[in-house]
Image (cartoon, rainbow, N blue to C red; front, side, top):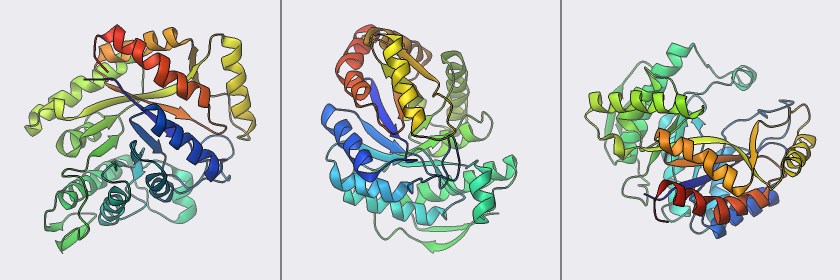
Length: 313
């Protein structure tokens, strides 16, 4: 299978024209997916800073792009009822012509939950609520009529009246909890995203495969993604200058923890993840978006990585 690349465009301290330009560039240069996070406060640096709402931005991306797939990475299920999430992503699927991805997670940000009076709960409660939400979303997206009585959600004879354009709208689950999140992934997801070095990712994937066996699913049905910051430049000095400029636009932000290197360096860095079992890479970008790295990832890194791993584009 070809190597898949996605770009996560940070929605904090930015402008809609800048986000639109980056998304349209990704669309033109053959990137597979564009994502944004689902939060209401800035996540890096000062928290009380402008931060666009994810699903609104995704609907706008859907209207101004033509090929790239679109999703939140990931949408906390605490912020919206799972039936509301299903309706939102189905609508975006129509706007985009069948390119939506339903990215979901258990949620974690204490600041915005406390500020907005949204119950976050303990880690155990979050995991149990997330499993219920994922089950409900999967059933609604698949066209089932849902009657469900859980601890957190109750649905009675519920249907998704706006069916997705896609035959099976994919669910992306983000998170690395080995006993609960990965079990929920094995049951309901089509895509999984996690963070960590290759050794960590390899261990997570082995646990995910065991959960798939327990759930009676073929693990190859779940696309596996890693994620990191990457800066493609020929010298480290150039790369450090890019990161310093980004930090200037995000008060209180530490310099992003990014891998800096030439196209060859980055391709060899990513091959370690491929060897661990990861088949896609979602690269983070904050304003001002590094358009040069975006282009070089598509034009230079990807072909070289595909040579290294022996797959065709």
